[in-house]
Length: 110
Image (cartoon, rainbow, N blue to C red; front, side, top):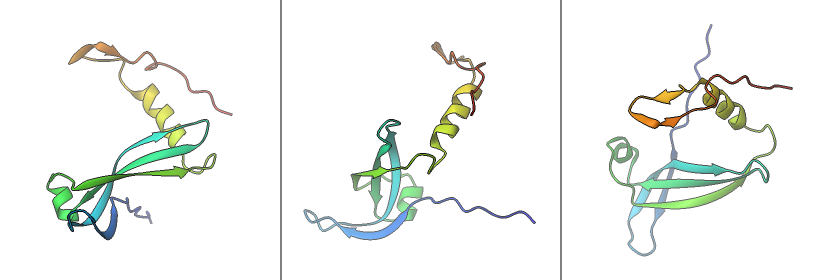
């Protein structure tokens, strides 16, 4: 029998902004930067009034940057990126100047 894997879509935590008193209850990762050498990852988390507001495309009411350290092989991010790079199309007809020179490359494994 197949196991259903649940995907995390956000964080539930009421946080009151000191300056305005506005409360954000739902927080969602919007961007991250992963440094392969230091293994440090800076994550930008956007805060919304509610999960429904985020799902409806409403603007976030704030954001925060969080820095975390990922140990080697703790998360298969590098593997995922390598797979995506070599499987992406060679070019984008809508953007002729954008090309993926790695589209036919071979991955090296150990």
